[in-house]
Image (cartoon, rainbow over all chains, first blue to last red; front, side):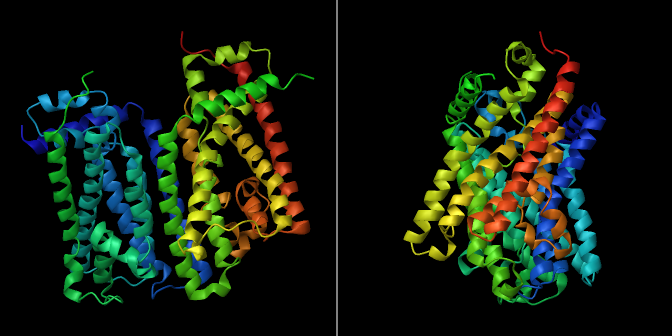
Length: 267
Length: 274
């Protein structure tokens, strides 16, 4: 069985398990949708009170919000195994069993528990995306759609990369470091506003350190066919999501180094 | 009248137990610093465009954000996890056997749980945002002391009432958890409600003006918006007293509701576990 088919089987098992409790799954999804959707209320209230900012209207900002939330929800769906890696795999020694199987550890972790409830965030993000498309004239031609899909792919890679790093740290700390939430949930929070409203040091951090701007801000400029108010050249805008994949590649290098030094907790 | 000693003991043991989780407190603190920083940068950007549209000054808004991050663990957005566990394992049976008022006993324990999570984070946050930030020359982004003696004195009862009200809200959540055996559903409903209507997401006056009359009288306003505005004297004199009265009134109402609900729930409670 090839890797993809195996992953598909993991997903099917997860889904069948959740289908045993359809009402609970549905309620959790609705709850997750509501809990994550309140952020757009805050964004709306600020724009409603203060008016446009940095050349952006609410509709345009909503496009940032929607794309970032779509990226994160998909990454969240794929990485439960990495998120609980420290607590559920390293500390318990369950990772030994994962290593014994003749398959990549990363693949097995990615297939660990695919939680349908995480689609709640995706649903509200899609609703906001539709709303944004109504509020601002976005020309959804082939190039714009392709840029959006490409940006989402880069964003998913970036968030998966962060979660792989979180799991990698567990090789040293033997627990899941929740401080990493600062990068995931905090990253979503930061990237749902246009980059040019932030002070320079924070813009640099979000471009070169944790390249959230490369998967959200620059591609959105390309989708809206606007030049960058900060002066990045036009040709760069659609290429920026590559940074997400570069981040993921670096994360997996760190992951390999972590596995190489893994010593079982011995339980 | 019953002695308050057993309730104090329940509060103290829970408080001391929860204080042991130092790593969790540090992680929470780090997260909340970052959160606060992002919020402040967003606020500063909007104020930079059109400060006249804001209901409070930027300095007050920054203090509001730090206060909110410091006292985040006092917000009643998650039911007490121990209650759900006690009901699922049957441990609640021991609680039924105690010659104590069941509501008061759970209330004291929940209070201990909330305060023990809030206090270390609040102290760290006060050090970081109230003392370190001004010292390194970032005084403009700092958590400021209360605006005057009157505000400081009024904030004390406001803080006590905000804690009492939060515990009363949590007790209602706990009772639903005990009746439904699972906290996930309750939390899913409670979290967004509390975050939005308490003023934790945004100070309530930032929402569209048409909603104000409603937002200022609903119970959750007493959790964040009212006490914080008393702190920087946005609510002073009569308005502050009105705010305190609203907090106290809703606390009494919710405690009353909680007692009724708890009595009904306990009569129907089936023992789990074995």
